[in-house]
Amino acid sequence: MADFLLEMKGIVKQFDGVRALDGIDLQVRAGECIGLCGENGAGKSTLMKVLSGVYPHGTWDGDILFDGRPLQAQSIRDTEAAGIIIIHQELMLVPELSVTENLFLGNEITLPGGRMNYPAMNRRAQQLLAELNIGDVNVVLPVKQYGGGHQQLIEIAKALNKNARLLILDEPSSSLTASEIAVLLDMLRGLKAKGVTCIYISHKLDEVAAICDTIVVIRDGKHIATTPMQGMNVERIISQMVGRDMSQLYPQRKHAVGEQVVFEARNVTCYDADNPERKRVDNISFQLKQGEILGIAGLVGSGRTELVSAIFGAYPGVSEAEVWLHGRRIDTATPLKAIRAGLAMVPEDRKHHGIVPDLDVGQNMTLAVLNEFAHATRVDKQQELHAIRGEIALLELRAASPFLPITSLSGGNQQKAVLAKMLLTKPKILILDEPTRGVDVGAKFEIYQLMFELARQGMSIIMVSSELAEVLGISDRVLVIGEGQLRGDFVNRNLTQETVLAAALAQSSPVSVPASAAPHH
Ligand SMILES: Nc1ncnc2c1ncn2[C@@H]1O[C@H](COP(=O)(O)OP(=O)(O)OP(=O)(O)O)[C@@H](O)[C@H]1O
Ligand SMILES: [Mg+2]
Image 1 (cartoon, protein in one colour):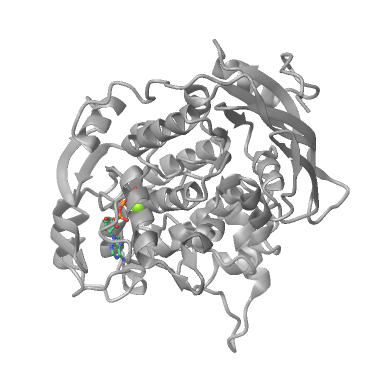
Image 2 (cartoon, protein in one colour):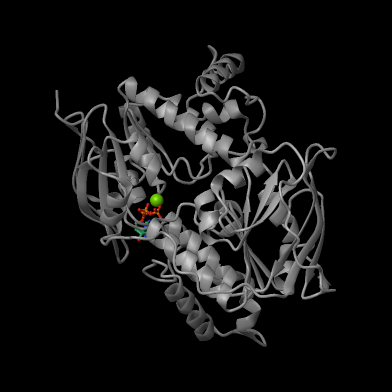
């Protein structure tokens, strides 16, 4: 019996010009739960893609031993057969297929003769989801019926439907609510008790600390440290990750909120796409002052994303919104109109609304402003490239070249590219929906710093975030949404997480709406 279930030795992975993994060693004991930590672009996902056969044997250097035997997988099928199951950072479900069909994709139960045995699969699916405490899912409905959090849990159920000896979770919790995360962590504890070994990747370090036995930190494709969690804490993980002590998680505030109301949304209402009787957002109005950062808090599903999408003309169903900028009514019926009028939004779901996977990093960034670089019939490539390089430097975006495909960037750096795209439109009002999802602690700090600087320059910012600490750390004012309604409007002075949560959970009418300045038009 081998000492280690898994040994990776001297793993080197190069992409043209980029040495993503530079001789990494990783050892995992049977039954151990490893927390794999590192900044955006450190190489975590790449290492796991090497391990799981996404990058076939021969496209990287080094050795992998699984259960004492060399593993030379040509594909993810080979590693799955060996019991290595990976849940990727970006969701891999097929939205049009039913929950059951997704759960059994490539793994179907068939009748003699080869036809699908749907009743058996549906039963097994229902049972599996019940075990995971998400029995409220109707397994015959298409997956797209469900929100991001449920989809993520379905994805995990899909992995558990296979026989896992080593389970790899790459950022599984970034789109989960607090209660879904609790379900996930419980589930992982259960699996650990059954002897399943796991490698857990998350930028939510308190989760890592709660669930993992051992912390492995990598930086710039190199192994930095392997430390038992006992005797570690989140601060020490962070300093290993960034290579220095980070005493504060939020930068110093440099801006003061202006007196003037610059933006107003009135009577925003969104109707459910499937059930027009139901309002996802119910007649919400709010104002924004010059240089103000407005945090929008609320439970997942409360209508936060719908609210900002409707304002930006991006709500997929029927919505109503009256939007005013500098005292003038503006047309934001579509995102393009909204951008022309001076709004910009970085969406929550970068894979579906943020990036165009077929384009390179630079092309993605200039998508919304191409006409700025167009002179007569020619696009000024020099000027365009100059703008792109400026944004890359400003955001400290890690890309070897702007000509690489956007999909080759690490998750957090893709997020920065989407932010760059919107900043290039030079908006008056910037809407950020979960701007630091999947972003490491160091880069979060940089994004906050940038937000403060933009506010100092007079830009007003609306930030939707599920992380209450972030909402309180960054916002000048906080709106709380619950069940599609405005439940609170707080100046962020001595405001506590408890107060915000209480408002979010309250049954009706706003908890406290301080008198805000009267509209000036
Ligand atoms: N297909 C690719 N082509 C070129 N470069 C790539 C490719 N995939 C990854 N890289 C580069 O390899 C490095 C490591 O990326 P990786 O996705 O492994 O980071 P990560 O640690 O998972 O980061 P994050 O926390 O942001 O998800 C990055 O510099 C990334 O740009
Ligand atoms: Mg990653």
